[in-house]
Image 1 (cartoon, rainbow, N blue to C red):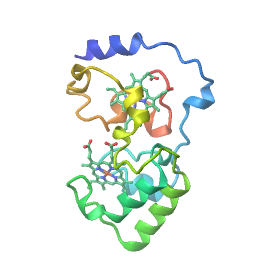
Image 2 (tube, rainbow, N blue to C red; image 1 turned 90 degrees about the vertical axis):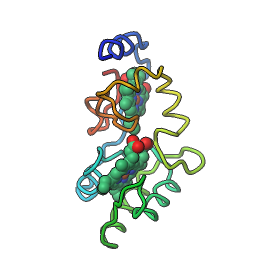
Image 3 (tube, helix red, strand yellow; image 1 turned 180 degrees about the vertical axis):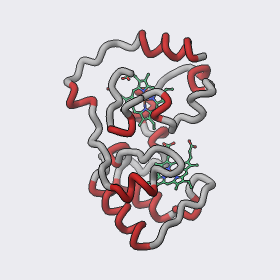
Image 4 (cartoon, rainbow, N blue to C red; image 1 turned 90 degrees about the horizontal axis):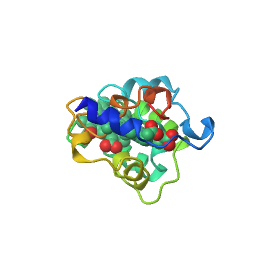
Amino acid sequence: MRRALLALILVMPPLAASADDDRVPPLRDPIVLKECGECHMAFQPAFLPARSWERLMDTLSDHFGDDATFPPTTVAAIRRTLVAGAGRAGGAPSRITETRFFRHEHDFPDRVWNDPKVVTRSNCPACHRGAERGVYEDD
Ligand code: HEC
Ligand code: HEC
């Protein structure tokens, strides 16, 4: 399976855009990095629009089946950072992995997603070693 994934990545066309375009603004807020990086990597705010972050922050007691509640002041601080850095995708998707952007960039066969190292689509660092730094270009 690992082979399949590597092969897939190797056949991806080289990136035409400049290095700057491939870099997502990294997340530097220590509170968000800590609290939202506990169960999965702390996703960069630019991957979802403000409406999505607002809803996620309003529903932390039932966060994809987990309880991700924090004290109100922490929630308010996290919300500010996420909304300030939000992207401009349409609608209010609950998941990055459901956005049109993600689907377009990740149109892979099931065997890639079924790789035991990937586990779930939201496991960005499984395939992007620089994900936590906002680096998603060809790796
Ligand atoms: C107690 C564990 C836990 C904490 C803390 C947590 N999450 Fe999650 N989060 C999850 C789980 C479980 C999922 C679902 C993962 C999956 O299905 O791939 C998830 C999924 C997500 C997704 C959707 C990923 C996708 O599929 O695109 C986003 C966005 C997200 N979390 C944001 C946050 C933010 C923001 C915080 C901090 C306020 C946070 N999470 C804190 C457990 C947690
Ligand atoms: C199964 C492996 C895999 C997973 C998991 C994965 N990606 Fe990707 N992603 C790729 C591949 C392969 C590409 C296309 C080649 C490239 O540009 O690196 C890509 C492309 C991208 C791009 C475009 C990069 C560019 O320079 O054009 C972004 C941004 C991105 N992924 C973000 C994410 C985020 C955010 C997550 C987690 C929510 C994620 N990916 C999860 C494999 C994966």
